[in-house]
Length: 220
Image (cartoon, rainbow, N blue to C red; front, side):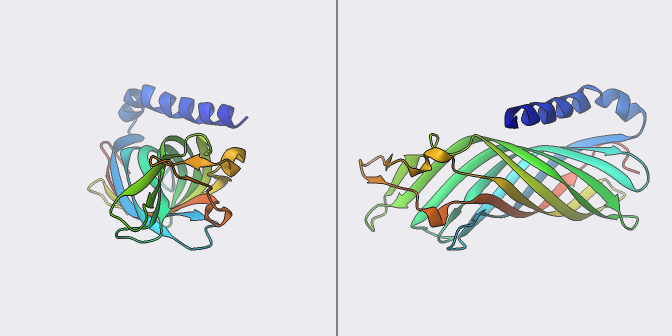
């Protein structure tokens, strides 16, 4: 069931791109690059550890009417947590290809609020631990104990100016655990050490970020 939902969302995004020429001609469709930075964490992590987050990709916007827009984006996104911003002892690095769909409502002429859903496909998952107080990290592949597909809900607020530049502040709260039922299994690091992912580091993805985007096409 989870994979079917993902396939439908990807198909929906492909249909938007495939019909973009006709939608451009109608003056209802616009698209362009988006890039953003922020923080990520694992919701449920008892240590409240965060790490820097970045994302970049393509954003599309369909103008339903003067008040409502359908915004969809596909972005490469970094997630995870670290116990320090600089030289962390524990560092979990997750990378996803995220598909995000929001309905935006324009409260005023340029200011909008929005909400929607997110799904992501994991492409990279590693846990790095500082090795016995040295400068070397013990790195372990987590591919066998993490879920390959992520789901969440999203919310945003922003400004979309007449020059087609947009600024957006957003939050994505995962609703599926990052780790799967195999997360109790023993993991072997590159130096041969074995360990377990502790329960207090498990939970769901949480990302807060600010983004800039530029849309090509009519936006109002």
